Image 1 (tube, rainbow, N blue to C red):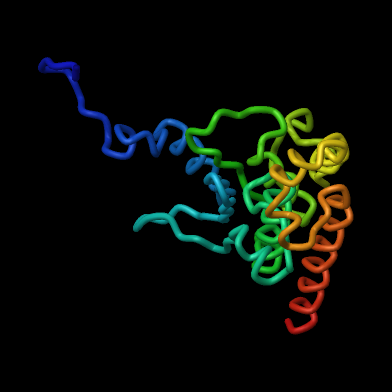
Image 2 (cartoon, rainbow, N blue to C red):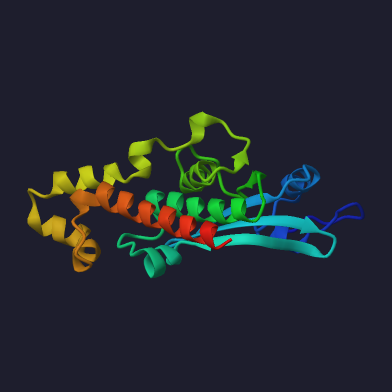
Length: 203
């Protein structure tokens, strides 16, 4: 039941809808730095570099995990930790190319869980050369970013073909052996790095 009384103030609409923490947003805006906005859905990661203006937020650059599949031949899920890292890496390179050197992380109402997808995004942006204040302990380790946990899980299930086929049917349909996930990750990352080099030469 909604509180009532002469001193009760109705929260802003986006706060009522669970979309914006205005106290946190105020602190981020006051910092004067562009915000690294990382948001995840069940299937994708969306990463944006946003700056606040008097008329509203302005997106400087962005990257969406579907680009990995469309442009860089990514054959895995677009919402996992490796995909989050690669999306962050792509957005970070775009930010650096547009003169963005330092940003502040904006995770919205998401809980800051260690090694979560949003911090894989952060690691990707950091590796692209953009400075972001952070605690190193909260970043995923390299093996998890490379998807080694997926390869290990596939190896464990390989002795049970029925479950293996069920769990990794989408990987296998795209001719990706999950045991070789780390190699596929490295190949996709190299394609991103190569595309960035081409863009830099054009500039």
